[in-house]
Image 1 (cartoon, rainbow, N blue to C red):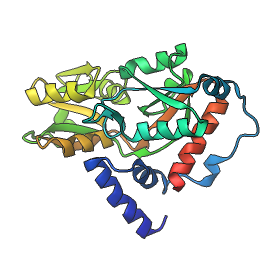
Image 2: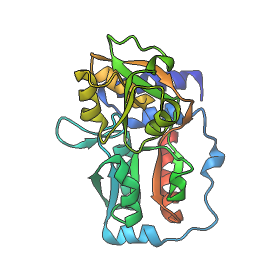
Image 3: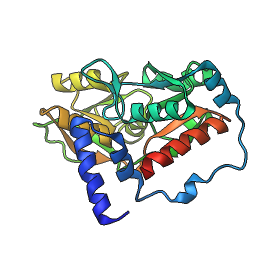
Image 4: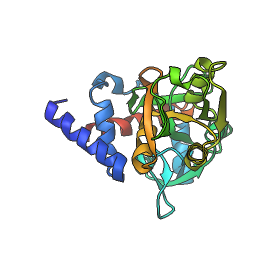
Length: 268
């Protein structure tokens, strides 16, 4: 990617976080420098079972947890919005079907997919070894720089060590919860898990019940832009693969369609 194009994407990404413009700019910024065309090789063969089922139904059912801006949230008009919602719309369009979004707790998404209640998960879900025992993942559509520690602007937290002895909030079932339990257990005064980031975790943070929340980097940055009382105090963890689309195990035909949409978004 040229420097000029990269700069254009950077400006676009900032605007997206501030006012919610086209998700493709952020996708291009985050993926362009990292992914090669080799990742998008067409599989030699794939079954058609899942795609045919969706097309016969005439509807793609996507599970999400709409409390994670800018990836998924409910806008001022009561509509689902965000990067993942835009990707879901593109996938439904590619399949030639309508889109139905089911909003639920993040921790309930994988079980819903396994039971067949939804066709896929679009919820900024990071592929992990544990999750890959239960579902398959598409190509990632962005890469993260770590986890954001969000605090009140008046907080003196500046590093991971400053979290020791503090009350920390995380979302149930997330990799941020896993990181906190692995790295802060016995060091933090308390690690509290919540079903929803927004408004639940933000409310208890602003109320003073906890000292910090740990969320995805882009989510933390978006929360700090949205709420002038908040800031990203620091980042913890290590850069990782960010979000990917989760599909049922063995759904190679559906994964192929999803990967082709991600490729189109990156190249657009």
